[in-house]
Length: 121
Image 1: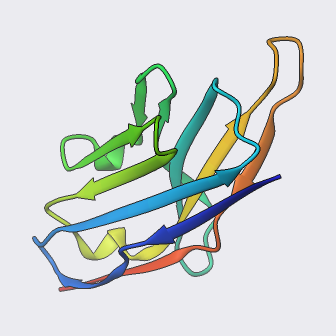
Image 2: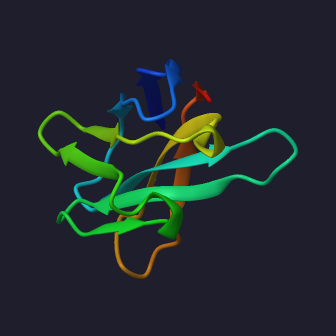
C-alpha cells in the first residue's frame, strides 16, 4: 500500500503564488508517475501536471508557463510551484501516484486526501 500526504494549500490573491508538496510512503516501486489533479465544485477531477520517475513532465494547457512540477526520488516527494494564480485555479488539489511492478502489470493508482487552494480576485 501507498500513503500520500499533501501540504501547502491555502488562500491567496490573484497573481500570487503557492507551493504544494506531497510525501509518499509505503511500498513504492522505483518506476512510477507522480502528479497533481484538481477538482472544482461541480466539476470532474482534472489533470494539472505529472512527472515520471525519469523526470518527464506533462502539464495541462491551462497551467503551462505558470506551474512547475518537480520531484525528489530519494525522498519520494513531489511538489507543485504555482505562480500567477488565477481565480479559476481554485479547487481541491489531489496528489496522485501510479505505479506498476513491471511493464506487463496493470497500473495501481493512489490518491492523497486533497488540499484546498482558493484564489481570490
